[in-house]
Image (cartoon, rainbow, N blue to C red):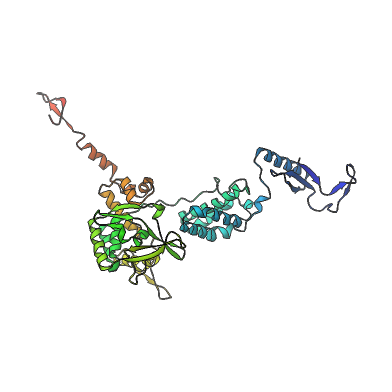
Length: 428
């Protein structure tokens, strides 16, 4: 049974109504609320007023009886402690690259602000103010949204462990920034051909095949000889080369979705010639994780020194120079160190070849469901989000349907006096 204890006085003798001062008289808060938690353990909290102490222990026992008990001292745990627990919990369910990204987001953008804070001290306004500051500092909406997800995930663990009563990052106050929806534009055939020609000879087939298959960059780097079926006219997209921190691994394509895409005659011709000129050799990398089992594949594209291609090196040493030669971006500027630096290109990455492929497929009448499969999208909604604006104009399609064979216009007959008679079918 809960009760309130006087810390400043005590009975003269047991059961006596007369009281004497204790050594604590006049020091600190006088009234101590005492109650039992769900584990039948006594908990206490001091108050300056007796009325507040009485109300507190009654509330605690009432919450306990309703099954809604929350330990008022539990929230003293620091957010960083809970964050490490959260990262450990999510690791088995995510691929290694996602774990690396979550750790980076937490270390760079959450820990400096909230890591040393008690979880019960964090308010919705604190979270929203932090997200707003990140946005004001130039961080993209998608990245700010990712930081928000990290904060929400960590505080979800605190909530599950009853360290807090509610998650302050999941309230109406906290709003993810909405980035501007930028629909991709398809490059012209001429631009794509100029960019392909701007690649060094041993990587020219890579660029052309990417434009004619829609493979992602990592999938192109991981494409092997055994994946290409020239007889069936197909490419089987079974893996990618992925960077995990300082390591590189073979891994399944994005969302773990393998797929098969058609191989055009132009891409087949380019790959046949490439294989003759640059015979593939086995590349051995761990599977999925740096400590994963080693697997070997005869990948088609490498550096001249025989190493597998690394995305950052490719983008700076091959892709951007090809864009310069094609007139897409300006020439690089020389830094004080003497190094040539290209400007940041947000809408001229290799992914543009994937957009080019999607535009070709839609222009050729390929259905949106088929295109989703060829692109390796998890659902058609993703494909529609990115490429619905590339579909043929709906009014044009409607007119074509009305003028098609399912509807025949009817002619109007004329009476002898020139007035309109009954409509007649167009076929008589």
